[in-house]
Length: 486
Ligand code: NDP
Image (tube, rainbow, N blue to C red; front, side, top):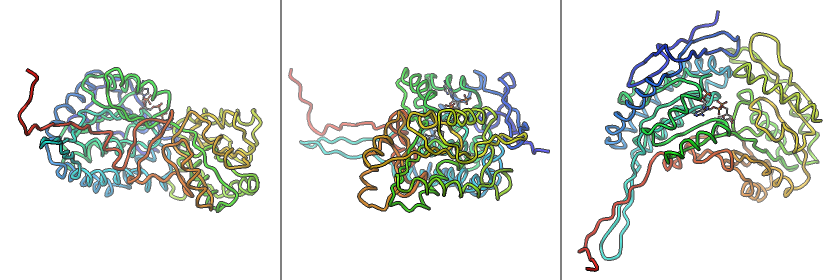
């Protein structure tokens, strides 16, 4: 029998769990079995109202603390999160289907890194002093924005919630967070942890719901900033809605990122990066390198080696720590991926390995490797968000760069080469926000993360995130008599 993961109630507002069973039902499904592991309710207008009011009420007092005081709470939350890593990982595995071998190291652990990092940074946030001719001067104050709304995707639920909450709270803001309705559980755990760590009630609230709840949040006059992690179509809608009220935004959206492998590259490392960058989290990662461009001379060897290494994949029960490939998050997502695999074959790509939908109750599909992919095929143009690697052939550097950049997306890009100058030249030429040389998909909290073009605006993580969760007030101080014309 599948264990229940029923939380105390659906929402977390003003420091406690709250229910309103009038809200639409949300069934939380374990992707390994298809069993319902929790039943929640979407937020009603009364719930949304209570969450925004409590955030507003908590924010002013929180912003009035010193940065170090705020930071202490965040760092304590990081410690609690690390202490609970296994329990949080098990929740995340049941919510998303991602194997425990991943969630133990990549989800709450990454959330804790963000809380620790921004907790450390909080005490360093200051304005500047600007001398003006004649003795006047200006100083700037770095101030909070107010109430921030966070909206998350389903692939990294607690990581996304923490990557948004940590910089927001460090800067003195309050937050109302809406997880994806497919993965609503772990954000509630973060809310509990922050209270235990000493955050005031109302500072971080979680409301559940479908897109309509997100829509109501982003248009509410009490909201000053919206940070979304989601698809490009949703990003367009949310950005437009936020613009109406001149709200600040951070948009972390989808991608179709290239990995360019030159013939002088360390082949085994490039193969490893392509495997991680396509099959980790069963391919459900925004920055995945789903267009792998490989230079002529090593093309066949590269494809053969990826196929060989795929034999080592362990597909199955995500709670077994030996498993390396879990199910997709939902039956619907698996259907989308299977549709792309069929389209790839129909459009003439060569399916070298995998791609079969597996029998059983879970939402399993084998990782798929396509060779002989050309730029116009749908599997090379559209974000699939599943374990489908497309390998494309190229001849020279200029051609590879032009083709890598010929996309509306610009989230990430990678180059593998042992030519030092070429590595930097290609990285400089990529139209992408997050680039890699001889590495791929590593996202340490110290480094800015985000996209260009349709992949988003703003940056998460690093000192750069501070710019997106605070604003500068200019204070001009007159030290001289004021002159007037008459
Ligand atoms: P969606 O865009 O479908 O949803 C994202 C979130 O927005 C969900 O919580 C969703 O709620 C909510 N939402 C939907 N419509 C609206 C609306 N009109 N107003 C406000 N909120 C709304 O993305 P997925 O959850 O399917 O996640 C996959 C996508 O996320 C992929 O494109 C992926 O590339 C991207 N992503 C980007 C990352 C990045 O950092 N750049 C990281 C991870 C994923 P509901 O689900 O209830 O509809």
